[in-house]
Image (cartoon, rainbow, N blue to C red; front, side):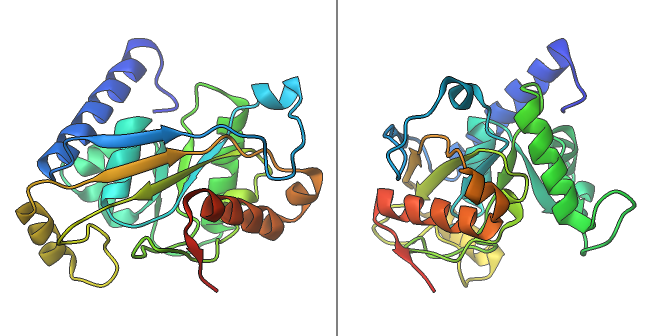
Length: 239
């Protein structure tokens, strides 16, 4: 929806967020506890006025469940990377096209970018420069986990040299875990629906502004963001 303007953009955003929240309600997430933690960055440096005004180009989040995407869509309706087959799904495909998702089948080269990573980097840079462009949602772990560990981050979200918004999702549970790490998808959805009340806690960390060294070294940038996220919510780092 980056190309939409005026009331059309407002309509897509409002409907997309409302529909996503309704789907969360169906899954039993009636209340979502959100925390906004503000603190000086890990090195204790003061952010200048120019940094404070910089807009993040991407949301980086840990990945626990398919529910993660529903939450982020209900919160800010970002764009994200999806399989090409998603574009052909009823309703879901229409929504994903409206929010400007990047559809992929396999890594392929284009005249402008080297595959998906180039397209993602360009989109992050655009969102960083233009406040009317939707931010990208990226799960740098690359797969779902049980939520107790953070896997090593891939560098795709950090190649653009732009600030990122770290977000951490946790799913407290008593019987059945919403984490989708090994079970068949259809069975997991069924069991999750059988649990009438589910819980989600969200921690929004401050925007992370990379140093010049981090901008030149995406691996260092990714590792430092990962360590910060782990420290803030006491998640273990997985090798």
